[in-house]
Amino acid sequence: MPDLPIVPPTEPGDAAIDRPASPAAAVGADVDVARRQFFRRFAGDMVNTAATVVGAAQALRETSTLAAQAILHPASGAATLAGSAAARADAELMVAPTAPGAEGPDGGHAPAGFRTPFRYGEADDVLLVIDQRRLPGELVEVEVRSARDASAAIRDMVIRGAPAIGQVAAVGLALTAHQARQLDPYARRATLRGSAAALIAARPTAVNLRWAVDRLMARYAAIGGAEADGLAIAQVLREEADAIVWEATVDHGRLADFGLVELERPESRPMQLLTHCNTGPLACGQFGTALGVVQAAHNAGWPLHVWVDETRPYLQGARLTAWELKQAGVPHTLVADVAAGFLMSRGEVDAVLVGADRIAANGDTANKVGTYTLAVLAARHAVPFYVVAPLSSVDPAMADGAAIPIEERPADEVLFVQGRPIAPPDTAARNPAFDVTPAALISAIVTEEGALRAPFGSALESAFERRRARRAAEPSPFRRAPAGDQGTELRPGQAHGARA
Image (tube, rainbow, N blue to C red; front, side, top):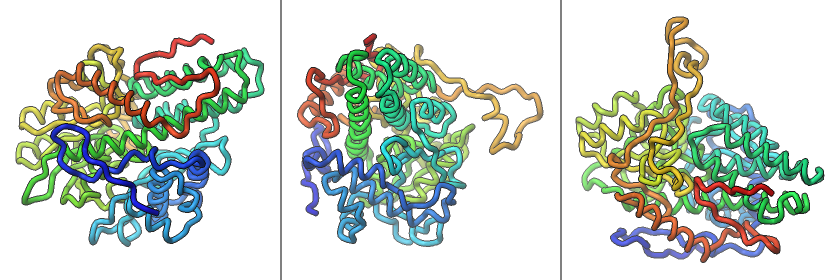
């Protein structure tokens, strides 16, 4: 299979780096079939659902390469999934190489790449989602067959990370539309509306969730709502969910390239990056956001080291980010959250990379609690602080961060670690899951349309315009609008408003 053509950087001042042309340009007529085959069979022979991580190391390598090949080259996905040696070799080109001498959990070389957080099962009516609460000790998958299942998985932290929960919510709602295809039109409408409301309520801070659900409901309204045929509704919502997953994959790849250009690489030593929470494929889909930039740097051969904040109280950094970096062979060290200031004071951090659950119109950013603290420390020590997030995490309807709803989670997450109490009985605890970093503390917001700088309001508006033009020129290959449905691209925060 020939390599994708290389196109030059598109942002003024970009350094010359290899950037693959849009995967959509290489897609053939059978693309949706190949993609469905990929999602049905991806990791099907990996491990049984109760396998430990130690036993899954080699399988993680295999499935990571299949993921890269089947997503980025869907027209040839069937050949890859057939297991041919040539296809597997081609797939290796699309993931980070194994670091020399790195060892994986099985004692051998660390697998290249990362693990997608969800896949379709053998049939199209089930999505298998990694239970992230069980990592890194066990790799266990949970079945999602409906929006109700998706809501529970999102609410209970089986799946987390703003981009990933938006994608799972979209697929869950599409699965409910499939289940409701034979219902009376008004019963079907009530089912879809109720499911949409339940999904949106599952986690209030991340805007990607509402954006994805509103986008599917806008398609439902566009083809006639209650007046439309049930089979047509199921097909259209499934295609829209597929499009959301595809767009995230493409956008996050672009975002990683822009982030790599943004970083100033030291000349005589490894780059030292600090991350907070988890922003790899487990949180974002098939590529990652802030950790996607790390992937891009590692894949480019940059010497680098990552400081991984443990991210109390849910330990996403310790349990998930460290696990993903281990699989990819990226050098990293786990630190307590409160150690970040010490590292910065000693000049041991070159840049801070974080994700975002919601970005207000002025650039104020809600992210995992502790992010604001890092931004203050970074400003004190003149360390660049980058928010790395797709435009689907931006909420133009939210003027500033003061109005962003902050989820308060159960106190037990603070009082217990893996079921064991760490405080005296009856100790009071408060557990805000997020905080808001003011735009003034952010060096740049790295998106799929480039690295944006203050004033963020106008920069974000321009980025939305660029994305709109790009998608018009290269529409998703998985989105086929029926007659009378011209499709809708909602901005985050823009409700569908449909009452069909």
